[in-house]
Length: 344
Length: 127
Image 1 (spheres, rainbow over the protein chains, first blue to last red):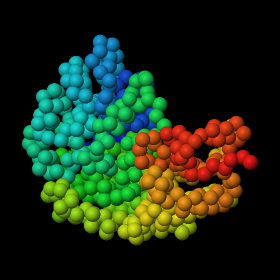
Image 2: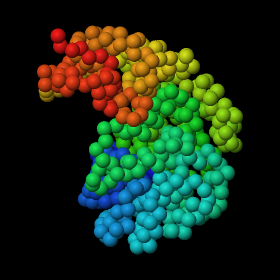
Image 3: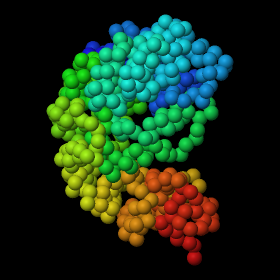
Image 4: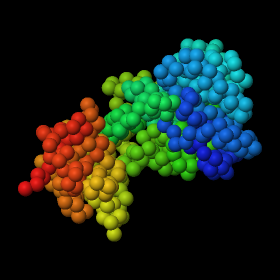
């Protein structure tokens, strides 16, 4: 198993993470927002000298270093002569530092980096590769690895078709708790790309997409059940597709990240599923969903599910059975109530 | 101990709101604040609460809101929800004891939504 593990982006967190280096194949982190930026939020903006120090430290510990430059929208800047020159300069510096791989979402960057630089190019999950045709396209552009769109994490026919179509490495993002077929996905990642990319950055009071996403899942936790996360226990069902897994969560504490590393490394987690999910972090204090209560369900139901929810109702019934809501949280009277008891 | 009171009131207010609305809502952070201008108050950052809930349950929500203010020793001049403009989202409930400088800004406002991001629950005019 190869685990790609997030780092918040500074040397102290990297040192903590690599205390468990035997479980980690590669670290990944964002670079500076001043060049290409990323499609997700970041805690740090490491400059080249920071990246160099961290890359050397990772390599000294036998762990690879991956830089994430997966902005989903650069406003066309990448196609201007100045944008091309700046991006090329930045990537050249990263390659000189010894970065092992660079994650990008833009097909143009996949092609130009793989042609001009001696570094592995990884297609981001934000390129939404959800078919063998798209996978072939990116492989032909020069991709050495593709992170498959997590929306198809439970579509085994598609996963097998992608595996059969390309020779490059495939990665699965295992713990993203995003809505299945999320309608905010493109707009939200484009927003992040500008907020965590070069100036000018939008000055936003509230992240509508995030708040709306939470609102939907607070009203209906069935949406959490249907999110395409992969439980540690279910990795074994993906072995004939890939053994390369990416853990999301570069804005979390190291302790949270290592908890996920241990769960996926051991392929078992006896706790709240919400502890492992990257995206709806805020909801871990609302819902308790025992991870083990999903034992066997991927194999029995989801692996062959046709995703016609209004005619099925399996996830609705399952949600009623397993989801609990914290009541009196943070006091001596805290307890978990079945969700069906809180909802009238 | 103020932290114990905050924890107790956070949980209590959340629980009462859930019972009133009939579904889970999350009071994700309850803060007591003081501003450099002289305003002070409470902010309850909410998740899962919608403007429709305020519309429908406002007469029942107001006593809960006032109860928590009294529990925490706040006598608010204004109580309002901060919403994400153009959406159903209520981001927070706010209890504010207005300073003399900020009072006119609220006093000049008209209607339930004097600004696109504010939904007024109560305003006590000076006599």
